[in-house]
Each structure stands twice: as C-alpha cells, then as structure tokens.
Length: 456
Ligand code: SF4
Image (tube, rainbow, N blue to C red; front, side, top):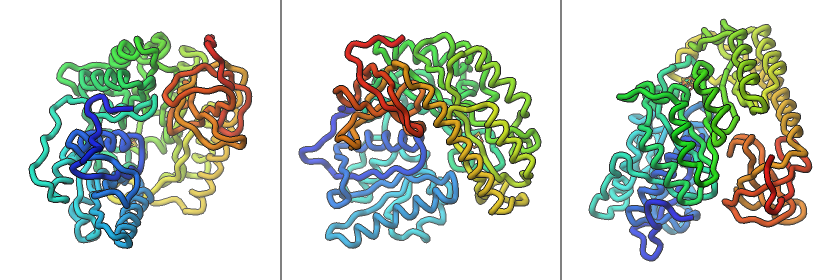
C-alpha cells in the first residue's frame, strides 16, 4: 500500500536506505516516521544491505540484553558491509543513543552518526550529511502526518515518555518526561491510515491511561477513544489501547470500552506484581486487594473482555512468599495473556542499588510463572474455538499443506498474542474477513473463511 502522504521515489532516488528496527511497537512507529521522512525527501527503501547506500538501525535499550542485541545488530551490519564491495555507513538511532549518547562515538567507531530518539525528525538531514548529498531537506511541519502503510493494522503513538520512574525502569531516563500528543495530530494520523486501507489502530504510549492530563486544555483518554472511534467507524474499523496502568482505569474509561463498539474490549493492564510491599518498593502504588477489586469490576462491567498483563519476577528484595503471592494471583485471575519478565538490573535506576535476588531463584520464579502464563494462555485461546469472528488478514505463511493466510481477531493484539491461520478460503492481505474458528494449538487458532458471513 502507498503512503498517505508521500509517494516512494524509485526511479532515481537520492539514496537507498535500509531500516533495521529492534525493540517494541513504539520503535516500529518511530522507524515508520523516519521511513516516511526519507521517502518524502526522495530516497527509497531497500531490504538488502548490498543494495543500500546507508543503514539506519533503530535501537532498544529498555533492558541491558536489548542494548546488547542492538549493538550486536549494528556491528553485524558493519561487518557485513566491510566484507562487501560497497561502503555502508550506519546511522544508529533511538534508545541506545538517547541513553548512552556521549560515550558512543568512542565505543562504536564503526557507526557514522548517532541520532537520539527525540531528534529523529532530523533523520533526512543526518542522511544527507553522512552521504554528502548537498542541500539539507526540510524538517516536517508540526502535526504533519508521516506514515507508510503496510497491512491493515497500525500502531499509533498517543504520548511519549513517562513520569512514573518505577524503580526498575530506565524508560523515563531514555525517553524523557511524559507528554501527550495533541488529539488533532492523533486524529489526523488515524484518518490518513484509514484512508490508506488500515482497519485497526492500536493506540500506544508508556502510560496511556493518563493521556491528555498535561494538555493546555486537559482531556481524558476516554474522550480521545470516542473521538478516534468516530474516525474509524465509517471504515468498519476498530481500535484498541495498550499499556493502561491500573490507576488509569477510570469509570469513564471502563464505560467507554463497554459502550463504544469500535473500542475493543481488550484490556492490557501491566501489574508487574501484586504484593503491596513489592509494589511500594518498585515505586508503584496499589495492593493485591485493590487489583482484585479492579479486575472484578472490569469483569462485571465488560463481560467477555480479554485481559492481558505483565508480571516481573525477582525484583530486589522479593521473598519466596511474595513470589508465591504473584503466582497465585495470576493463577486465580486467569489472565488470557500474561507476559513474564525476569527483573533486570539496569544501570542508573534506583533498583540497581538495592540488594539483588539470587540469580538462580530469580530464574526459577520466572520459569514457573512463564509456565503458568502459557497454560492459562493456551486454555484461553482454546475457548474461542467454535466462534465466528472478524479477522484482519496480515500475511501469508508456509503451512503444513502449503501457503496459508495469517490474520488476527479482536482478542489478539498484533505482534503480542497468537494468530489465526486461515486454512480454507481466499483473501488478500489487508482484507477484513469472517472466519469460523475450528481448532487451536498453543496461542494459535485455525479458521475457515466464511463468504458473506455475519458475525454475531
Ligand atoms: S510506568 Fe513504570 S515501567 Fe512503565 S515506562 Fe513508566 S517507569 Fe517504566
């Protein structure tokens, strides 16, 4: 699909660029914006390093392991380029330069330029300088829609940064303080995406529930969801919102998710832990009772909703009993999806200075909770067998009996949860089709396409 705002220049591009994106959906959105800026500046994207004039590596530094992966990916590209006949300058962008900016030029001489996340709107200028292309391209205008579109689902950022400073997390140091993106920009982007063929928008940010509180005229997330729903409605589209911190689940928001059909009843509340003592030590609020009350209220108000969470094992000071508390809580709440992470000691965070949990105990707790999450997830997935659902077709994969269509239903967030494998019927990537779910395995569902089928 073409970009809503610019046409790729393929005849004689000013330069050919390769983009490698590491990390989360927020980085995917940032890469997409850089891609659109470079295309608007007359450059063309390629997939093969051998064809590229420049490589852009958009990095993740959320965890030490993600930083290592980002640096390895960069060095691998540099090595590959050194083996080839053509020179391939590498531009490192995103979280690693934001976190370690000043020390990087000495440590990574293989890299031609570093661009912090907050400076990525200047990517075309940096590429021009690195490749010595002459005149500097114009920077985007405030509010200008810059997206390329590939498929029928798109992530849309509604905020940047975070004010919570959880003791274990480096994000506020990397991405800065919280600021909401203006509603007009979000709505314009969603409109352009829908016009370009997108049928699902996934609203993301580090802390989506507090969106709007810092605007000149404060707004609530619920009001934004209603506004975005108006935009997607004429296209038969839907929207979901991820990363709702427990405190953000207001009555107004719950009522909006319940009452506005375009807003999917897919609730993603990362709890990290349930023990009041551990939460307080993490710098987070709440207690097990409060969380239980929240999830009971959600189940009461939004019957049939899907619930996703995130749990962390081995935070400094976590005892065996507290690890058991979290395990029992996850088991009893029966989350549909639960991502489990082992605590990682991150340089510069408060928790890095605390007394650490024994590594072996941390790994055992993590594995035990991951096993439980998997068991719950497989059971929750199997419960959808027998349903007739709308599925967004994401692509084609090689199945056991040849190529099969892959898509996802309302209860599967793209890139996070399982998929629907459509083993019978034909459709194009980007179509929204009706599917009977006939079988499941692990987090995956098997479906058959229904021509002109109505979804109950
Ligand atoms: S809410 Fe906590 S864990 Fe999430 S980005 Fe902010 S500081 Fe990090």
